[in-house]
Length: 231
Image (tube, rainbow, N blue to C red; front, side):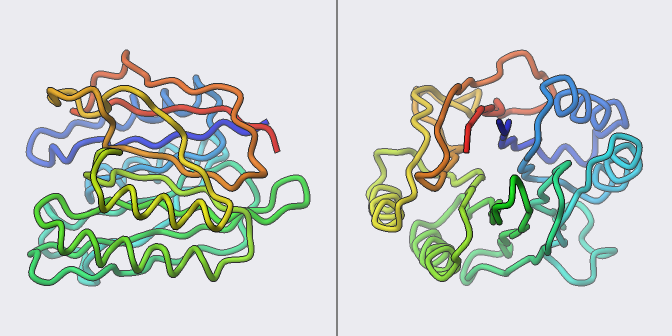
């Protein structure tokens, strides 16, 4: 049994306090999560997360979107993978960005679980331009389609499931035997629509046992999604 979650923690750089990191770690440990994809992890929060997770037998993996991470600290986010499983490798890829002003990235972490290699992809797509999202999705699809491992794809896609770009993307994933977890409710708190913009995709080998949008975590403008799977 694996417990998997995706959570955009909201970049509140100017108002951040270490209590936020403690709440993230409490969410992780109290729900016994094995794989957590975080989005909008800025430098202050990342530093505190690294320190707190050291004591919990979890690793946090992923690089910043800008190489000179001491510059533009407010905007230099990670999309890390947090896991308590055996890590084989981890790499951060840059996604196409122009003309959007902010680079977007995807973190790929490979773990070994019950003798199977699982590639976890975590990302946060552009929020402004569909033309940029289209190229980001194309790059993401190429990375996944050439991957022979089982797939877990997590993230804030800034796309609802009725958007044509998103429909085309998950149809292409279905051809690779990867399915979308049907969330069925909003994950951005201020959204007037009941459709999610945060999503989880899984290889068909994962059997979904439980799915929940967690409403009692107050530290973000997003709700985390938590699932339980058998493999």
